[in-house]
Each structure stands twice: as C-alpha cells, then as structure tokens.
Amino acid sequence: MATLEVHIEEPVTFVIFGATGDLTRRKLVPALYTLFKEGALASDFTIIGFARRDYEGTKFCNLIAESLHEHSRTPVDEDSLQAFCSHLTYHRGDLSDAAAYAELKKKLADSALPANRLFYLSIMPHLIEPVMDQLKTAELITPPGTGPWTRVVVEKPFGRDMKSAQALNETLLKYLDETQIYRIDHYLGKETVQNILSFRFANTIFEPVFNRTYVDHIQITASETVGMESGRGAYYDEYGALRDMVANHLFQLVALAAMEAPEGLSARSIRNEKVKLLQALKLAPSTPEHPSVCFGQYSGNTDTKAFRDEDRVDPSSTTETFAALRMEISNWRWADVPVYLRTGKRMAKKSTEIVIQFKTPPLSLFQHVACKGDVCDLTGVKPNTLIFRIQPDEGIFLQVSAKRPSMQLVVESVNMDFSYSGRWEKALPEAYERLLLDAMRGDSTLFTRSDEVEAEWNVIDTVLAAAADTKPLPYTPGAWGPAEANALLLNGAQWRNE
Image (cartoon, rainbow, N blue to C red; front, side):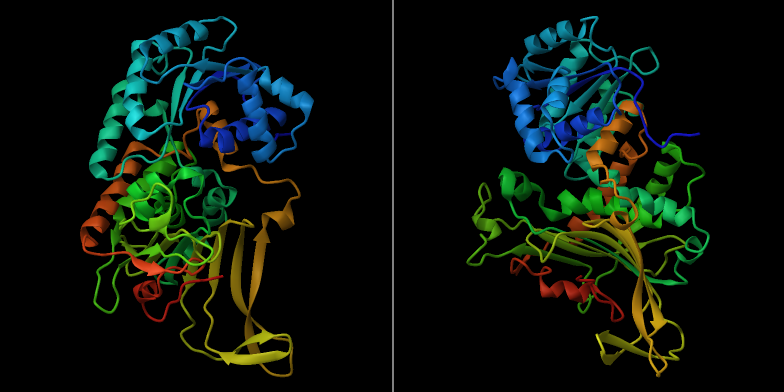
C-alpha cells in the first residue's frame, strides 16, 4: 500500500542566515519544528542559526522555545522541544566577516554534521551577493551532481523592477546553477493554491469551460486588515502594494488559474507553462471611463494611523497601499477575458481568493430571487461563479442557480462547496512546512524560476510606465479600497466583497 506521507531520507544541515529575525521566529522555526514532530525530517539533521547577536549556548534554544510557544501550529511539549533543540546550534558572526565563514567551514567539516547543505537567506536583498561571495570563497558551495548537494533558498523580493531582478538573477547564477536556487513564494505552498491544478486538470467537467467562450472575467483579491506592524514601514514604503504583492503572489495565482495543461507534473513542465502564461499577460488598454490602474493609500481615523503616520514611513509618502489592475491575456484561450487584480492593506477583511465568473445564460427563462428566510426579492440573473478561497477557510466553492422550494418556478443562487475543514479533521500544513520539505527533497515545482521572475517584472515595468502619473487615492481603513477602483470593471461586473 502506498503511503501518502512524505519523509526526508537524506541527512541535511540547514543553515539559516538571519536566524534571529522575524521571519525565522514566526515561520521557519515553527515549520521545522512541526516537520520534526511529525517525523518528516531525516533522523540526522542539524539546524545552524547564523546571526550577529549574542545567542550562543542555551540562549538560542530559549529564543526558539519562545517562538514556538507563540507561533507553532502544533502543541509544544518539553520532551519534543528538548529533542528539537538537540539538533540546533548557533553560529555568531557578521554577514560580511570572512572570519565568520572560515569558522562556519570548520563547523561544517565536523564529520558528525550532514554533508548536504541547505542555506536559507532570510536577509535583505542587498546582502545576498556578499553572502554568496563569502560562501564561495570559503568553498562551502558544491557544484551540482558532484556528491553532497548544496541548495540556496532566497526570500522575496526578487528585485524591484526588471533591471534589478536581472541583476539578482545574474548574481545568483554567478555562484550557483539554476537547479540549486529555490526562490520561495509562500503563497505557492498553500493547499488551495496547489489544488488549482488538480481541480482543473483532474476533472473532465471543468477544464473544457476554462476559456473565453464560457468565462466572463477572472478576479483575484488579496486583502489584508493589517497595516505596518512588525516594523515593516520602511520596507513597504520602498516597495508598495504593486511590487510587494502583485509582482509575485497575484501573478503566480493568475498563472496557475489560466495556464495550459503541462505535459506532466515535473517542475520543468509546470514552470514552462507558467512562463508562457506570464509572457502573455498584459495591462489592458485604459479609457477615461474605465482606467486599467487604480492606486490607493489608507488614511487614518480615530482608531488607526494613516500610512504616512506609520513608524518608519516618509510623512509625504506617495507609496500605494492598495493596487487594482485590469489585465488581459494575449492568447487564444483567454482573448477578451478581463483579469482583475486587487490587493491592499487596512481593508475590510483578510481574504485571498480567485473568482472565475462565467457568462450569464443567453436567454433568461426564470425569475431569479435573493431570499432571507421566507422574504425574497427579485434580482437579475446571477452568473455561475467558481471560487478558489486561499485564505481563510480554504476551499473551493461553486455558485449555481437552483429552483427554490415553493409553488412558484423561481431560482436562487446556492453554493456547492468543498472546504478542507469540513472534509478533513487534520489541520492543513503551513505553507513554509511544505516548501521547506520540498527544498530538502530537491523538488522545485513550487519555487519560482529565473525566467518566471523576469516575466513578472516585465509586466510590472509596463504597469509602472503606464501609471507614472497615477497618484494613490485615499481610502478609509476598513473599506475595500478607493471607490474609484470600481471604474476598472467592465460590462456591469462587480468586485466580490464577501
């Protein structure tokens, strides 16, 4: 009988640069602890935290324990915590200090440590080249296919425009082969995101209607209620919603929802089709009545600071905290189908979902009603809508019309839904659990390839050029962004604000 669980057989030494940072404490360490506790890791593994702060000795384990008690999705008990800590060690050093890498080399040469190495760069982008240069100089990077492997995980942002993205790719490829680079986008580790491909290509009844003949439009929303917590003001003021969310997360969701069927499930096959889709993705033409770009910036109220008043944000900042785009896909399948993208901070609710709205029937034969209890109002025809909800309450939902039980022949919208919480009792894996496991397995399917990154930034550059004179419009915290974003929608379409 085949097992559905994944277990890493190869021993590995996991080196985290930036080991005392926020990402390590909130995401990486809790993910590794859960994998350890669930038996997914090899029995022989070591985690080395590399940072400049003084956390040597038991201090590092104490820091990890605090992080796990606060952020782990699995219960933390003393026995498993101590067993996990036995695999941890701390290496104090500055990222630019050659002596620190010489000492790291000595530590890694210990025969007790696994020779396979996974370096996780939880650091600022401008530090990547100095770190890679030091690793190369210290001879800590092995060529691919020569025995013990070396892999490097790189966190976004993968640049801030095409030029910087190309420069980053050139830097990485100067020291590594593409097969050794794992550019991580945590959205791709979410269960529903992975389910998009299986839903489309494992079900005969749905794939034939994913095209311009049946689909009216696609809309993708990634809304957040948070602002600049965790000291993110300086970073966000530099990048903004377009670069921070659209250039990677939302474009990846578009690619998965609209790509052609891959020839197989290999990383190469899937990423090839994603690249083709991204290369066909364009900003739609703008008109005075229907612009294709809308930027917003949240204002303040009695409970919430305005973006310009946030810590480490320029008081005169024109950075967008909300971005909405109307895109189009220049290929045979999706010609003339609008693709609406929307993301923002301080919005009405936390939600990420892909909506495939189908066309209305060519002839309206029935009266359509919307009802609360026994009270019903006549409405217009409600199109079928397929919803992939990424977060929260992951699931897939299909809205269809069905006759309402009554003496009259009227129809109303009903949901056919599949939710993970209603189907499986086991908690869903966190995105980083899946992605770290895949990196250790050498499976790059859910990681972004260099040409994907460049295709994404090519689109963003055209958006930035087209919107050079577009100023962010104010919106109230708790709203769905500026009201002007409604003008992007064509032919009576509406944002799904649910």
